[in-house]
Length: 305
Image (cartoon, rainbow, N blue to C red):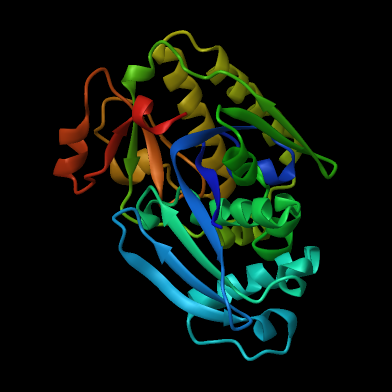
């Protein structure tokens, strides 16, 4: 008998990086996600198949149970296989019945968004595995990839959320965020996937000493975005947030770097330098971005749950 689990993808609208230190983030679960289908197998191994949104196989391999239980097992040359092995080892430590009660498994994962988009290939996988094995997905994330956990919370919710880390506790508040000017909001893919793990490490290496003041300002901006009733108010808040994170990272904003002549506001989402941006425009801005080589432009209503 098959077991199927599904998790939503994510976009981080505010508090990128500083969510790690307690800033309240506005996160948007997406209409795109990933499922995981488990069937019984044989041979004391996991046969794994991962499919992209176009149904093409982007990974296929076998993970022996011995590789999961033995921390000294020699790693493979395939980086994807090593990542899966790391996740499954941590899952096994949280629930040894993964192997104790099984002869083997066949696992198939299916993305509903192109893998390179960066909407949460890893976080949806971790949340699905945690659902399957009835373990804490936040602990599994902490023990494998690390991070704030906002992406796991997004995977579990079917509406936008406010997400805060407070002295080790996670505060998750579902809310409505469907502004009346949502038709003026577009998500644009920047043609490269950004490594969240690498971005987190870079942030920790350069974290400012006045982080408390920065968090307070970020929280004010998040509330300003939630209260915005006009697109102009939102654009001002977006620019304030871009300037704030730019000062921390000592990086140009994405508008300065790539789109200085764009008439609307532009904001990075999540790790800077890749994945998606949010752009404001009174009409479809696809031609502007396509002319500059960015061909994936998605309206708010087709992206956000």
